[in-house]
Length: 477
Image (cartoon, rainbow, N blue to C red; front, side, top):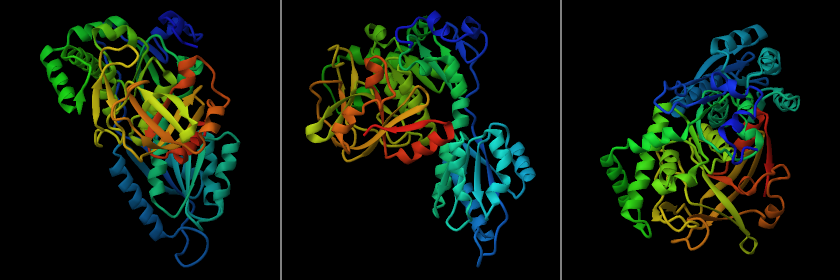
């Protein structure tokens, strides 16, 4: 485990050790500006293969030409809506035709296969399964009998999932889940040591094997330089925006707000210079005298950049998966239970304002002191009552702990625990207490405690994602 590990110990968790400074899944960010890595691709390709031959519109089992045209139009609409997906569309009735479409789409392209007739999918499945690409199969009612095979392939260890529905909106659902794999592969995260969490989540070797994500260690002096270089006038404007946006400022002073604004700008500058897509900071507490980073974490998550405090790598990977899948930020927090109300609390001193995504509305917030420390500044965010939520965390890089609930209480002003709080009604709080961690999670108190909350019920999507990324979904509640 990487709790309180040094830079040397972190690099030593893999056999490559110090050689990873020059190559491999981990890099060191220079204390001065470095040449940034490429940003996420503007679009990820997905091979959309209509498998088999169309059938007449008035007989047999299968999909007719008119339905293919409607689904093709639906795929075009998905491209426009999601913005970062490009379908390479074609029909294939033989393995050779399927292989040609795979080559046209490129090596990184996952596959969306639409079954057209009895045996259509089976006849073209060979090269797709042999390639090891994530495969989502869409099978409309009465389109044939091939729907029986995808989950059998999944049981054999293939990265396959299945959508069976008459609703073409499932094509968008499939695309959202499929795009996660190439987006994770092209992601770049920054970390300030020490890291914490399950051992695989902290291991650069395991991270590279599972996701292909680049990990960049940022030296403390890089942050120090960025913080000192912040334009005082920009910090003043940032502080003003936070103060004016708040429903009320209670404990923090103007100096607290200004210092936090400097940190917020410095973190944003760091992410822009490094063209990074995620951040984990294990040195939060050491930064507090020069400004609390909590507002900066809120700012990043609202902009679509997952940011994990306390160096929690399991929570970071969870936030990244859901950001790539739905464009939603997560509220990383501590849990506590109230079985008298059949409820789970989640509380922390940082969270996103825009839980519906960067283009959604911002939740109201207070500016408060840090609850446990008694000084500084954090947002107390008042999340939406009645909102259905998913509470989850990816642990050990291959087990997705998950449950759902509904927000029933949000304090007007918190008294104890961390400032931002939600009380969620769940199916069975007493059962969840007994099953916390699902029998697969061990570690220190933080590792056991943290979960990430997202707006919406995403259990079905989580199961599809787990199919494609060879994970296991474990319901805690």
